[in-house]
Length: 577
Image (cartoon, rainbow, N blue to C red):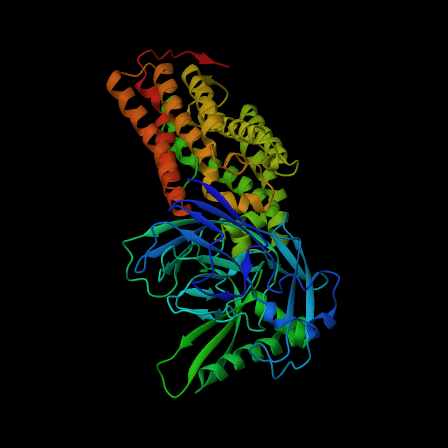
């Protein structure tokens, strides 16, 4: 796989199959695009509304490219995987004269400049009113050349892509475009930091972007006649939103009514000016078609969202109940409840500090999904450690010390910047944290909550080593969100060698554990084969969906690694303080 670059100067202002490509690539190659904003650099942070009166509209919505993909022929499909998108630290939104869904109601030009807080993943709309917009960057223009000769404007969308302005084309998504000319001739541009479905005022948060895409020629998707796309496994179920409706026999008028009613709501309830409410609808609200069958009217809804198992817990339980071993079945409930409480405290701490990462990677979590406010979660985050300490103190002073150590490690990881520090220090904290929790689980599993058995100690030490060198399996699927909050995970720091190295580490860890626990030849061969296979899967399929699935396989391998002591041929059982 090769990496190529399309420079900012490599731009054009029409879709035209006669434009010579600026780079030629092979299927599977990656290309980085450096794209100006939709104004083609005419709007800068120092401008005011007067710039809208002097805009050269013939220079708007330029696209960068074209890229010639070898092997792409008419009738094929070009697959574009969105690997990364980085924005500038500023952006703009504007209401242009004669442009936008309600242009007749907003005849005067208006412009709003945004400071993009890339570290925390937000752009403040109105700090006094507490209104901020999550950053979900994408390219509004993504397309290939048409078979029809001549220049075609970059302003509208086409069956071959173009100005599709689809806000779901964020990192982790995949776009499929029909190929009509040899090489496909792909171009992109029109960077957006955030946008609502519909982009009703005509602009999103327009910004400069650097986008990285991977291109694959697909010969098996001849049914692709228009742009198709798939997103990461994200759901909006459970999110809280407010919806206004528009009802009319004319679909466009129903849409206008829904937006107009949302503007009225935002002005009345949130104290916004009408033009600010219009901007907010464009960058943060979604249009939905609710009902089209009961003639003569259509029902369109305008939604504005308000502030909505792949866990190491299972391997830890496996280790505790086999290495101690479990003294009685009720003890399992003690382990599970204690683990759940500490995992909940850790998760809540992560969420209150890394909301931008959760918006990208885990939008189903309570805070980004809106099931709990940030303020309530923050208060609970500091209350839960006290509950953990009190709960542990009922068992023994040793378990209380485990909880206290856990609190300290969480502080190091979250408040003191461990999560965003050097990747080795981050992995070391992960290993120490999980080993500490394993100690607590093992203490709870036995009939003596003050001592660990020798086997448990050996199992915890070996598991810590495994975690230290392989826990970044969980980081591959989270690259976008981790980058948004400035984390330095191995896949981000070493994007080229991270996967091959992980495959080697998985095989080496499997061999080392087999030797350490002196497994029988058949058991060792099976375990080493499984570890090698998991490592290979991460290398073979680099999509976010693949990484999510392969993380489940990694957890299965880790669970087996955590119980290898049960198959050891030289267990030494002696109690140890």
